[in-house]
Length: 410
Image 1 (cartoon, helix red, strand yellow):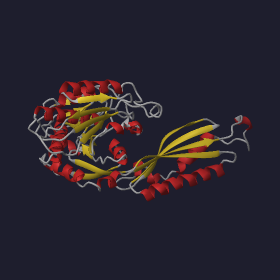
Image 2: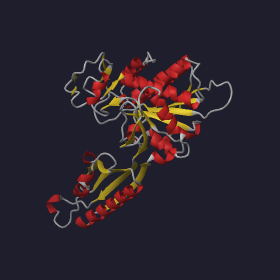
Image 3: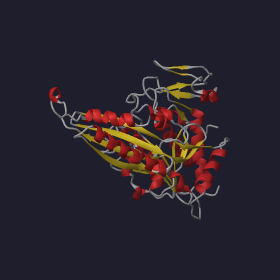
Image 4: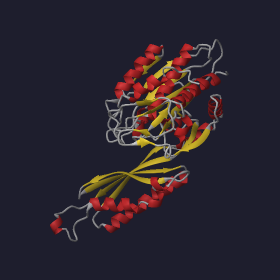
């Protein structure tokens, strides 16, 4: 079903460009890392070569457009979106993609690690297919360069096949998605679409229209420092205060202890000295009520730490990151109905899942543009064993083409 002959080469090229973002810098600049610009500029050139109208702003947001080819009538503008950065959880500055053609079903041996069907049963869906992985020393970057490759391949297909009807289409590429802060600077004033789709999902056929509500809480511990040889009755150790606070987070409500519809607390960062320490905690839940409960629980913990460390103080700064996008699709049922149809017309049934996390689409939905998430076929994101199949990426690209046609009444 691969109608996209340049798809594999595109993906390998994009994946070979290291584009890790840096969460510690994202609050000060976007993109947070200069390396993202290499891919942004490459995509800008490719869009121009295809014949798309394309422009990049100073924050690294690339918006490209393909005009409607309908002779008459008007249909809504829709957009497709993916992010250029990769996660910083494992090495990703130098990426060497490996192409495994005609996969035979065994373990894929990499440098120091392997991808085994016993741990990755979905591999067996792709016997005889082309699998792409890293060499094992880094992540691959299918999250989200498989999405970028699918969008670019779909755009090239539509330009080469003017017989496929479509309205105005926008192709949006964003920086710093992995930091959770890139969309703080999204150029909403440049966007015309009434609905959008992110290609940032995982397994083939996945459709995601619900995500966590997300809050970030910065807990700042103000201690009272003194020479530790004379500390009795005088020292309030900010490092110990921070450690006590983290230890109070319920272990049964952590990311590693929950799945499905259950949310969690997650301590993401800790640093400090005797005098001052800072802990960053992520709160996640599908329910607004549960998120409120978790925020209140952290306030109780902060008070308990203050009582346990006389002279110390705890200051909490709470920040909403994104909301569950589920309600955004009620105003226009076509957004999800057309997506289901587009997936079915590739030959498979859509698999509806809730995202245990968030995407740029969740943020865009909160800005008033409903944006569900489409699979791009990758597996084992943010790890050295990340992989993607060529046929899954091709199906994602075909879903984009189908959506363009279906929205145009085709």
